[in-house]
Length: 388
Image 1: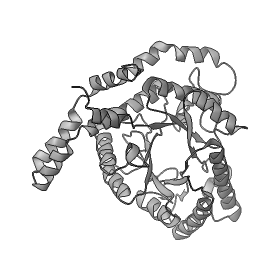
Image 2: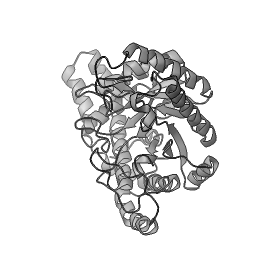
Image 3: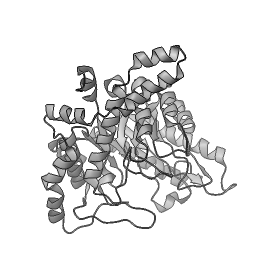
Image 4: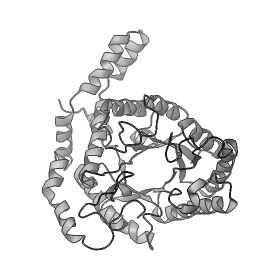
């Protein structure tokens, strides 16, 4: 079975943004492991990310993390990316590693610290102006560990005021995207713990403020595709951070733990008009490759998203709707499961070859010798990792 022209054309709309930090060293609370050839600066991170796009055709942009990816000349970094066939994408802020942010950043009681956090985001917007980036993504570690530690309502008010000042600086072609996380590093309460809180905050800001959904940032058994549906229905699903989890915020390769969940999510994205040219929802990976090689890990990740997208595009929506209207529970579920169980790997291989890409990107990259080359070339200096 080859893909129909409709499915093939829809697959061509797919673009998955890679996170620069996925190419640096990462780890657990116990250890950050080094790998030969790990990038030492943002230029080398982008060169590695470009390999993913070269072999898959799926990853045309790279997200930056500030200050981890700060450079003296962003125009030069932008040209470097373009020379490698990719663009600079989302700018991610960081208010969780500075000593001042121990008790919060945009929600902090101290005016000086809150001012510092706001100014950091204004600097990120200045960088967006130089890189041509559309989105400023904000994830806040703000929260408390103990009941009574701080006034939770006061923190919401202060955060809202801070976000309003940042949003006022966002350009007409830019967006503010607010991420949420149920817990960690705060364990009694997070200031943005769920999609509802994020939605409430961005809805108060305006049209160019949206929600980022990280697939690992939910309580066990949460119906994530319901959240996807609701945010698309409300016009506020700005972006995804795709990863996979078994227990908490594991940041594993997307689709590794529950490929059926990934399929269900993408079904709702397509149905809700958030996919490709139909909408503005950005697909991005947010993963930490701790024990696996980083570039192959990212290649496997984007291929997993592509495979589940292909299956979702094969869903017979007309037949599904008919069964739903008739109240035929088993037929409706059977149609849904038939799409999920369809093996599209051979068709995707053919699809890639027709577009001048390797049928098996993982094997083609392994045969390229790139990992051995960078291990030999990148000797000396400090490898990029958490905080660098």
